[in-house]
Image (cartoon, rainbow, N blue to C red; front, side, top):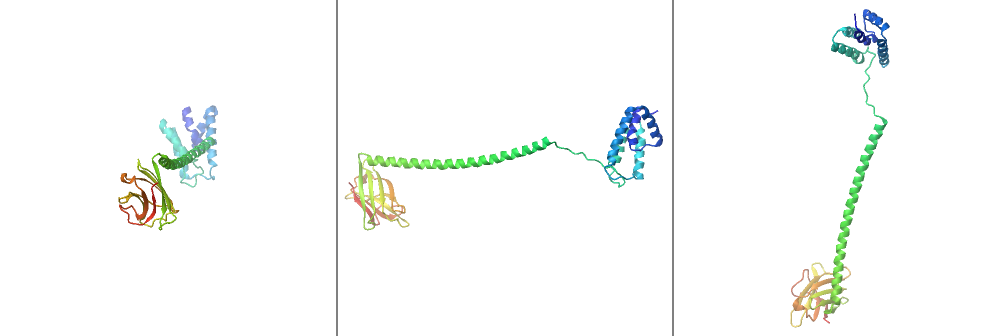
Length: 287
């Protein structure tokens, strides 16, 4: 006589109307006294009814019906693994038989559903990453701009410090007890030109400030000369003017030229020459 577990193995094919008459009649007798099996059978029938409405109704083919009946008969075998295999194959035969047009059951693929919290979390994470990336780029650009501005300000500060140092040096030379001044006037080459030379006989420091000189031609430059009576002119520094004819030059007088009685400025080859070759544009006596 079949056991309770044997009858439970027949519930699925019975829900599919796949049992032979003798097996179906025996199971119905068992169902009259077993509430557990009745409940499980109703559950399987509800499942098969739901699957049946997933496609248009059609009669199973003779081949498919014969296969289901064969699989259902095999449920009576005693081995547990064989019974489980038959039950699984019986279900798959109905739900996965996609090659035959006569099947009215389709497999419902599993879908992974994301909750609203997960969706909004993913969106928020993406926005956060994008915001961090944009912030990093902005900060990098600002940092580069600040570095460039810092470099520019440092360069300006060095220039101002150099200018201030020169101004202090000029002031100290002009106000030193041993400082002297010489005024130079323009010659026939530059009648409106003028210059003054401040110099210290002890240290030899000298500074020339000129105005009204015409711009030197290409390859030419102005050169200062220190003239001591009875000696050839001694060369000084070389300079050029700006577009307005203004020029400033700081020079170191040679030791023999610190007692110069005359100063002159001539137009010479660029770079200077050891002895005057060009005409004088400025000249004047020491005070």
